[in-house]
Image (cartoon, rainbow, N blue to C red; front, side, top):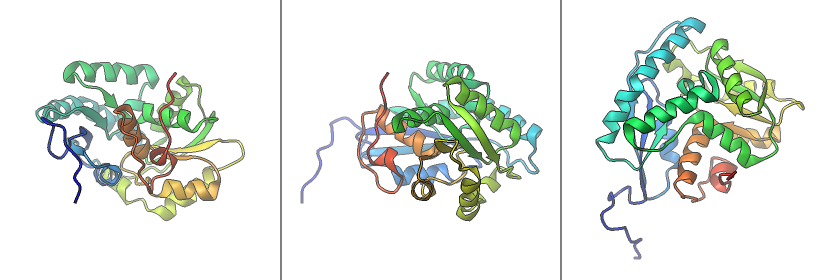
Length: 261
């Protein structure tokens, strides 16, 4: 029986990379989806960003919850650093969309300063995924958010020259309700979003489980369908030089690579 040699002095299980993964404490989707995408020799050390499970969400309370998450991220990052990870992966996206590209990069700068580590975040990962597919300028977006949050997503994409033609905010009533949206509802929403005037569909909201559905949707819609969790984990792997093909999640994890400017 052959064995793969492990580098000396490395983590026994994460001998290629140890990822610290962050998600809201109400999120039950990021951890299993990232685990399903994980190649051998990479480990995902999940750390909660504490937040109460808000009920009866609205535009106002949704944005208030994002503000609370913003304030709790630093504590989760400091906790993760005690495990000495190699790289950081953000499994929460709304906080990085708010304020557009400039605000996202300010947040990243701050997180790098307190951790000394590099990060993959969902919004930038989606932009990099769009570049990897190529030829995408106009998109439609599906989210579990409320309209005010989708407006921030539109702003973010516009900062990168990507036009958000239309969107569907699913208006989930609580943070945990997001994980209860089923594939039938998602497939119907994707069909409503589709049209000849868009090049791709992007799903945002990390507790909305669409990583497995996205490649099937690509087949029946005939265009890229980018799930944010797939894009984020792909970005983390490729940034760290890991190009293993992972089946079941579409072209990103099968063969696409980052496009260097």
